[in-house]
Amino acid sequence: MIQFQQVSKRYRDKTALDNANFHLPRGAMAFLTGHSGAGKSTLLKLIMHMEQPTNGKVIVDQQDLSQLNRHQIAMHRRKIGLVFQNHQLLEDYTVYDNIALPLKVSGYNNRDAGRRVRAALDKVGLLDKERQFPEVLSTGEQQRIGIARAIVNKPRLILADEPTGNLDPKLSAEIMQLFEQFNQVGVSVLIASHDLALIEHMGHAKIQLNRGRLSGAFVGPN
Amino acid sequence: MTTQAQRSRPEQLGKRLLREHGEVAISSWLRLWRQPLTNLLTWLTLAIALALPGTLIIMLSQAQGLANQLHTSNQISVFLSLQASTAEGQALSQQWQVHGDIHKTTFIAANDALQQFSQASGLGDVLTSLTDNPLPATILLEPVSDDPEHIQQLVQQLRQAELVDQVLVDQLWLQRMHTLVNTSQMAILILSLMLALGVLLVMGNTIRLQLENRRAEILVIKLVGGTDAYLRRPFLYTAIWSGLLAGLMACSIMAAALAALAPPLGQLAASFSSDWQLSNLGVSEVLLTILGSCLLSCAASLLTVQRQMANIEP
Image (cartoon, rainbow over all chains, first blue to last red; front, side, top):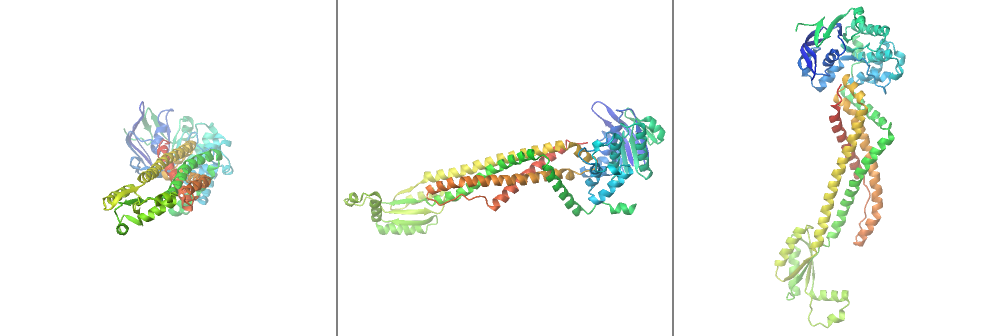
């Protein structure tokens, strides 16, 4: 699903990723670990084509991202559900409109969008909140709305950047269980997190990132 | 699973675009009224910038009609030498009548000229005491062209003719009239261009502020795969609505200005013994103003979005 071939990403004063090789197979679930500032977000941004590598190739769903034009980049992003640490919900949109946004962008009509939004809300257990605005919800609920938005388009790949960063252990475990459920129906999942205790407990594959170097599961020689 | 996925696939492109444009048009319209005062001031600014050159252009194009009427007095007076007989004068007049550059000729015999002069001047007694008629026969010419250069050429030609003593034309007045019209046209063109630039800048700035206000939204839309066209659309419709409203306001301002100017200008024309009247906005002028306003706003919007959207990258 995701392939990094000798990918390096250098900023002016530091190297975020150094000659990284890894291959996350379709349908796999893995955690990306490393202390904060280790480059986890950079790696996710490369997959989203929010950043371009300095060297090497990023291939997602058999597409070399460096070959995409602006329109194809938009199409590429539609295949990926992205969950942020700070959920990135729009304050002046209702819960419903926030979740429906990826569908609107992809051209769904209101009827089909409504059906999918409610299915996604049902999945995260917040079906009764669709008319509310994000600011009246708890942090845990906001994060679940963020997840509902990420899955509403039925993506083949879910990327999550510290999705439990602001949550207590019980809520964190619930969120992680949600990701496991999506993985069980065939969605590839890659979660960047430094919550090592939780990751150990869950027992999925781990990719470590340390000073721009990758090690662990799915990682090729470099 | 598959059937449900198929059923909720995105619909046909044409139908989908139509629906999306309709939705964005409505939501952009509603968004305008969230800040009615700010937007009203923007529209008024645009309207004034449009109405000023608009009013001047309409006045000038109508004034050209007036100027053309006055041009009929581009009369050339050809005074024949005293030796020329009435028959010779008449022959010359008829000869010129068929000249390509001359619209019309009128022959005034020396005796008729004296008679007219004695009536107009009230010096009848003095004139009858003269033994010889001091006035020459005259041919009055109306040239085809209004152009001072053409008229000058014609005058040169006429001077060459036999029996011609003197050719008079109010050339200076003509030239002034033309220069005045040309200068006004150029001034209005420059003014229009400057104010069009003003419209572009005002609208561009409005759109830029909107983009800034919707930064978070734009970022999220980009991340969930919104295309450039999708992102551009609300700003394009904002510009269309603003252009439409500003255009309507500009028409109202122009109509009021023209209504106020019509009576004094009518009096001015009457003093030139013309029945010319300044008429108010016509349908085509209203439509052109609104179209121009919308086009300028859209251009401003597209240019701004093109430039600013690239700065908002996730």
